[in-house]
Image 1 (cartoon, rainbow, N blue to C red):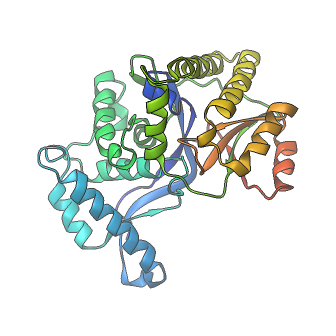
Image 2: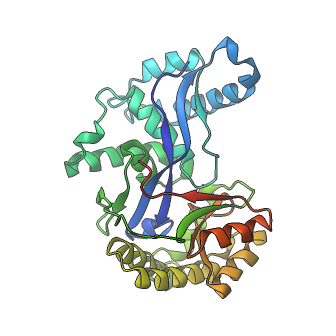
Image 3: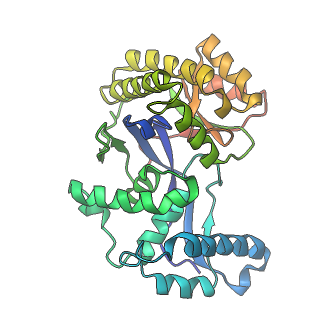
Length: 319
C-alpha cells in the first residue's frame, strides 16, 4: 500500500564537493527514478526481502538519528513513524543507492512530507526564510547518511524544481534558459557499474581541500570553475560554459582521481582529447554515475554503446 505521492531523484549539475567549501551549486530534479513510502502487504511476497531490508534501514535511521532526544521531536511525529515502521513501512524506490542521484535525499523528503507536524508547503518557499528553514531540517536529517550534508539534495527533491545555492549558502530557484543546450547537445548520466560510499570520500576531500588543507589552493580553483560554469549556464553563454566545463573536467580528472573509478578514466580522458563530450563527477564519485555533456548526443550514445556503458539522458525541463 502506497501511503504518499512519489518523489523523484536529482542531479547536481555543478557544485559537488565545492559546495562544502562555500561554492555555489546547481541541482535539478531528475524524474527518471522515483521513490515512495509504502507499507508492506502480504501480496508482495516476491519483494519481501527488499521490503524487509528497507524497513530495517529505516529502523536504523529512526533509532540512531531521528529518535535522539530533542533533535526531531518538535518537527516529526515520531510516534506515528514508529507505529508505521512496526506495520512494515519501507521505501519503494527505483533510485539506485550510493549512485549520486539522491537516494537518501528522496528518503528524507518522503519522511518529512509524511511525518512533519506542520510540513512547509513547497508553494510557500517563495519566502526565503521558509526555504532556509527547510534546508536546515534536511541538513540535520541527511547528515546521518553522509557524515556532512549540504541539504540541497532533499530540498530539490521536495520542492521539485531546480535550485541554486549562492556563496552565502542561500537557496533560490534556478532560472535555466529554455534554449540552453539545443539540437544535438545533451546532458547525460554514465553508469560506472558500481556503487560508492559518500562519507569516506567527503572526509578525504575536506582533509585535503578545505582551508588549512594541503591542497587549499586547488580547492579554491575548484570553486572558481564551478562558479564559472553555473554563471555561464544561467546567462546562456554557451561558449563560455563549454570552455569552463572543459577546464572543470580536466581539473577533476587530475585532482580528484580517487573519486574516479579506474575503469572509467580512459573514457574520461577520451572526452578531454576528442571534444565530443565532457565528463564530471555526479555526487561524490567513487562509482555510481558520472555526469556528461555532449555536443552530439547520438554520436556519444553510439560511442558508449560500443563499450557496453549504459547512458541515461537528462532533461532540464521535465517537470
